[in-house]
Length: 411
Image (cartoon, rainbow, N blue to C red; front, side, top):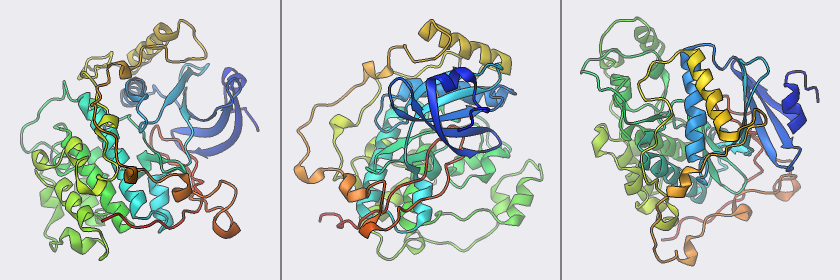
């Protein structure tokens, strides 16, 4: 493979196998660590510090993944390697097979047990980050990585923020352009771009659950007229743009065979008032995921997550770059290659001792979820699921095998 697009010191450490994709902000390869033989995904972010916004996202994601990377349902960041030009940066992640968006778009690959187990793991990851008083703010199917064993890894923490330091804004705050176009944004985010609670993630999780149940996004994208109105720059409420539309109930949007417990959980997540939505901890006790519920494995952090830069501080792009490089040097005492040497946050994990789960609560395993990587059912060709997700920080190869049918949930 041609390595012209990769710095020499990166190619010396990692053997590039294939390019997974390229976008406006970066390029992603599948690679092998020459020292360990581990298969990884390498993302080169172009001009990561070109402005304050990009620099802040890069800095936050690296810092938060260091805090959360020991959790089994959060993607692990293995290496952070500055480029020779001091503008680009390489992020090395554990390799995953696909993302939830690709699986949903493929059709009927997900059976009821898959959906329950995937959602359980998402709740487990969300409870973990919320226990450190951090909100993700960008949960959506393309940010949910999967492997052939139905293991979930939440990724893309570029928009995540600690709750401390977030300012409150008065009613009637102008709608920002950025939050107006996302299908998974909570109503309060659309109405006030600077006021957040953990409820914003719970609304997004409800949208993800609804999309798995429905097979397509639960809420349609805005019309052309809505987009034109939102881009007008007028300081008016978003509700005035939406106009009147026929009221629909959740059960009318979902297939007739939707399990009642799935509909009930969805109705408790998609609640307009943020404080009335279920928390992640409460949702983990819902009958929809009861089969997998095990408090001893649903970790929490023992304290608030605090970034090296005070939340709300206005730093320049150059200052974010300087501080990131300082963190790398302090963590390793070497310039390259970088490996996190800081004590993991998991050293203060809090677990609860409870009796073990019943044998019937086992998760769906590889036999239930994925066929071999080489062939599908009955010797058919492997089912490929499209390209990699281009979300900021997301790296994956969509190559999940054909999925066999599963029995329905136990009564």
